[in-house]
Length: 347
Image (cartoon, rainbow, N blue to C red):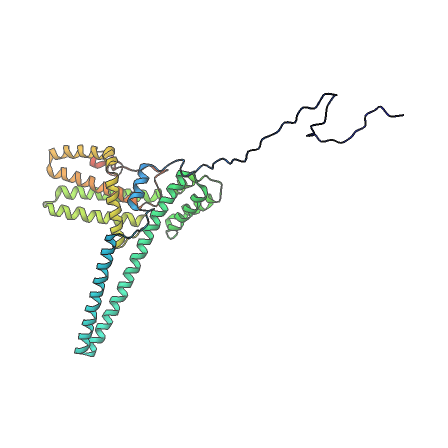
């Protein structure tokens, strides 16, 4: 006699032949799996660099690769010929001294050795200064890209390089220790760059702004009181050279002769690129002030105009020598660093 009670048995849930409560089983749904991968968004392209940072990179050539040109070939050939001519002249001089007297020959050889050591030392210092300026320009560009793309790994690497740049300065010890602690925490790339800018670069900005204000004040006063135009030109040029070197030294550049020429070229390029923005910012206000001062005294008007030019050159030097972009700190204008040129009360 068979048992009418149903017995348990195993079955698969995806079996199309299984029926429940006597009803036919419905066709099992089929899922269509697609293997398409979504494109990964490019963080660096999500927020492009502003016009100010693009002008700085174009002026300093931080991303520019060296390419041989006709001018480089001309200067290389000319330098080689001059070096050979000097070498032959020194050789002839030593032979003449040696022919006259052995003592004069040994004395000439000693002076030649001193000259050789001096030339090698100067060349080494110039190469080191150029390399340091190139690293600062590259660091500025890397920090700007890390901030624009909110790239945390790139920001940590760039901030570590910024900390190493000022490792020898005792006044930055507290800021460097704070940044070392922050880099171990979970901080976004954009925030990390801004923290580093406020901690390390902002105190240096205050010193640079004081240098620019002092230079603009000296130029305006001396130009207004100087009796000769040629003295005005010489004094303004000397003050611009001194101001440029001082700003580069504050930010860690320490340029030599070739380094200064490179910085001066970058400043000139930055002034040309940002000329339109400067006119829209505060230069028009300065020109109006110059016109009012010129009505009172022609010498006073020249002093105001030369002071404006000095302040503008100082701000361009600040932009191209600064190791970090202006993000957390407001980019200064001529009215911020030299308000006395516009008749402002604050200084």
